Amino acid sequence: MMRHKEEKEAKKEVFRKYLESGGVLDALTKVLVALYEQNDKPSSALEFIQQKLGGPSASEYENLQAEMSDLQIKYNQLLAAHQEICKELEEVKHSQDIVQSSSKETIDGEAPK
Image 1 (cartoon, rainbow, N blue to C red):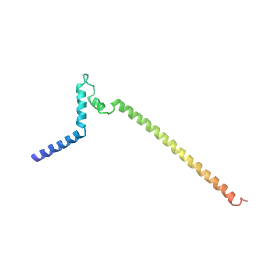
Image 2 (image 1 turned 30 degrees about the vertical axis):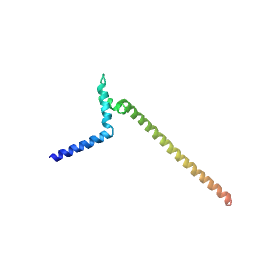
Image 3 (image 1 turned 60 degrees about the vertical axis):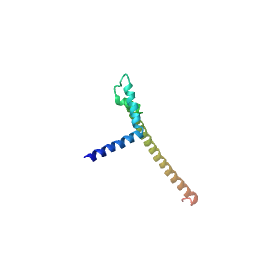
Image 4 (image 1 turned 90 degrees about the vertical axis):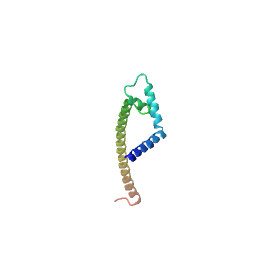
């Protein structure tokens, strides 16, 4: 029983050192101190923390999602137009090849009688 508790404590210590070496503990401490020092506490502590850590607010996130959705629709439209133009270009090239090969036959060979 005691061995299990020691292993658990050792894992916690390794994790704490990991967070400390990555600057996570320092960053979280600074954010929590900033929240503590706010005279007028924000309505959403979580959103305050997210913003202080560099993340977008909920409304910014929604705007980015909407923009991404609009851009995806435009991308799909442009891709479809591009594919259609490529198809038309291939058809034009193919018809030119047919015209060139038939005119070459009449120049190189005898004219049809």
